[in-house]
Figure 1: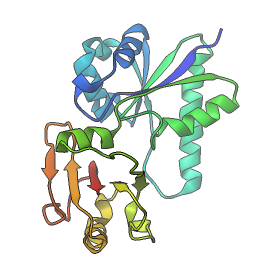
Figure 2 (figure 1 turned 45 degrees about the vertical axis):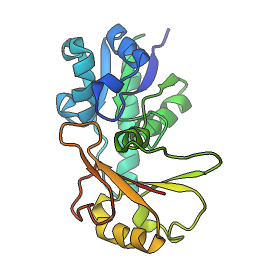
Figure 3 (figure 1 turned 180 degrees about the vertical axis):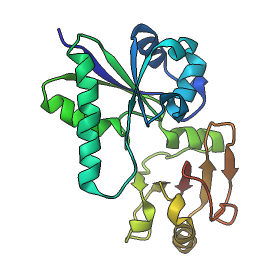
Length: 225
């Protein structure tokens, strides 16, 4: 019998926001896959080990997912990562891949999932609290009310519609183009709040466009209503 690969979301940063299912799967399985080259340096690992201390003694496998623009290089790394996990699955061992936030939203595990399923392996996804839901809670605001739609947009600097759709926006992965993003937000006339490093020790909350620093960090998320 081949093992099962689990893509497990560990939430946005606060170990108390991990689900009971995520904690159980980490406890019950001996092989834990972690994105990066050094498992114990991973943000996902640092979150999970606080809720599951025995994680430190499990077999940790590093799945290198470098952030590069070369599509061929990216695909090579994804295939390599999937093969590493498949070697354990072939031994009948389950593999739990831990990932920030939710396993279904802009998740690196998704790319591995496609390859593993194509190779005939069973993959199961386990939800975690998404970063934008956690950010809204930390800002103490609802994401949507009544019949408002919600638009979740990555790499907002590539947008051409200038946030002109009805409803509210979540802008993700905008840190490298924050100045341009802030200019677009000002012209949109929307109410803007943001969270940087949400639910982590160095969390910062911003209540307006002007409060958001141009050099905000990678884990920055904007809610525009």
